[in-house]
Length: 144
Image (cartoon, rainbow, N blue to C red; front, side, top):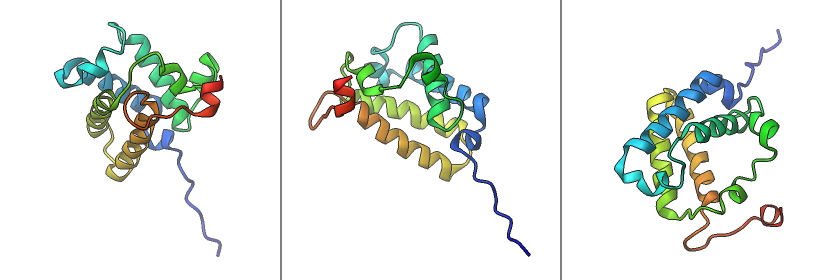
């Protein structure tokens, strides 16, 4: 008798694909718009969050192992380089993460998966920080 291996789902599949990512992104930006305590993160963004939401959706799709929409439209994400014009310190990072944590809690029911995603977002948020103590620039993004 052969053992049947359960196929491993990508994070994109596990979260629920496009519909779930869109729901997460929409809720993320709604929270950023609604919560007064996220003012510093919100003011980095344009008044109309539509394009930011679309780009974030495209990015998350590929980041989670789904269609590489962002790369197809804009090239390599080089997120830190793309965000260097904006002052992102610990306050902005933490506010961004608060919105993500709340959006994840509202949209992702699988708690272990949600916690794993949030841990990845914490790393991503720290990578984006370009102001404050101990900031660094990745060599490949600084040279680009």
